[in-house]
Amino acid sequence: MSTTTIRKILGLRQLHSASPDQSLRDISKEMADHNVGAVAVVEDGKLVGILTERDIVFRGVGCGLPVDDTSVADIMTREPVTVEIDDPISDALAAKLGDAFRHLPVMENGRVVGLLSYRDIPPQYAMMFEHFREMASARADEGL
Image (tube, rainbow, N blue to C red; front, side, top):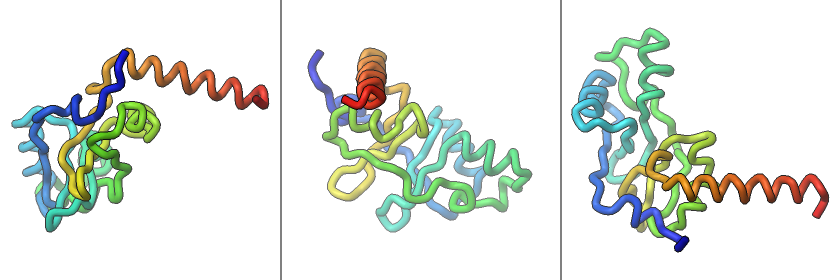
């Protein structure tokens, strides 16, 4: 299997983004209209966070926050872990994609150009990475 990059997986996919001052209602509607589970939060051309459907449910609506008076900035994840567009898939997996995160912002030349979802990762890559991680852990446990 040849190594593939995040760029190859993302292709020409459109970046969906939000501004920090958008209301939860507005961004939720946009996310639903575009059938996306996460958006990059961008201010003055710079990535300032990421907002996922889980953020909206668990940090917003589930906490009783009013959707019209709560902004994206109030519940977004600030300073998200990112990957570079020409990184191999293993770098995304090593950055905890699938473990701690379901989405990672993808950067190119200092600006966000996409969002990588765990669902974007070909299953064989995820399985190979998990196997490698298990083998490395076993070797560490054996003191090798």
